[in-house]
Image 1 (cartoon, rainbow, N blue to C red):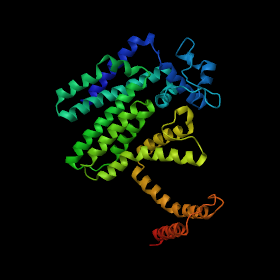
Image 2 (image 1 turned 135 degrees about the horizontal axis):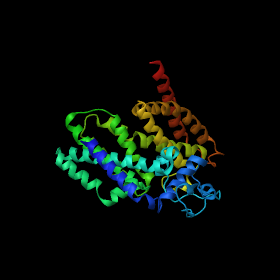
Image 3 (image 1 turned 45 degrees about the vertical axis):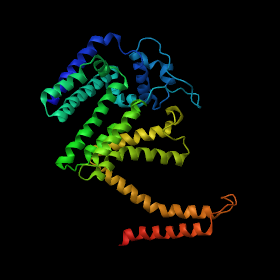
Image 4 (image 1 turned 120 degrees about the vertical axis):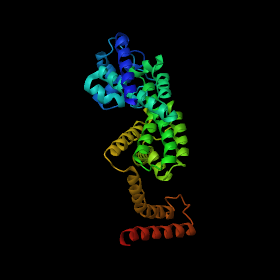
Length: 346
């Protein structure tokens, strides 16, 4: 029945898109597509070249002024809009331009409508209630409008619904004893994508994520599920900070996109890579386990470097570490080397 709900919603959205097609894209829509074109053509987030060449005239007939606040330090201009939606629709735009993007967004919205029906049924176990919930979510004018226009709200609504699905899944698994981890990895990935569509979705992602973790405590094997749920957000965030520290990039989620482009690019790339790895049957929990082992093997070498630096008066500006501190660090280093060797020998 949920598939029927999705097909019916898709037909409604497609008809609405056809009816208003002469008047769209408008508003901020072309500006999201300009970022998409920049990613595909220039392989960058800078948008001045797209505006200079007029690439947007393929879907918008008149001149467009760029949506920017200030130029970057390199003199280039970056859009004020978040890059999540442009990156998401880039494959569709590459295949068929603006029309393909509209079709892709309608497909996502139809899947969201099917999910709305499924969530309604999971909540009540009643078909009539599921159809009522489907109608309440699918048929409002704002929902229909957001289903085919190039704004982040439609996709954001679908991803938010996956968070509600996760809450209901946790409730069901508290009684049926299900132990699968893949659904939780995908739920975590879906919520991790929300802030990339728009910063206002960060509150939704954080709130739903916290509620899901609380619900997981009542299921079987809650620790593994929680790790799976947090695997992709954790791996993407830690990788971005590691690269930023290594190459001295500007870092932090409090930074604007235009000020920390490399940092945010690593987060986006790591999130997408994590989702792809899951569909390739690569165990994200196993990756976390192996990364922890690698950190443990590298830690004693790092401690040796810290010990030498902390003992050097010139490096420490005539305030080297105390003898007791050096002894404690030295013993810790020896124990960690012994543990690393023991892991392979014993």
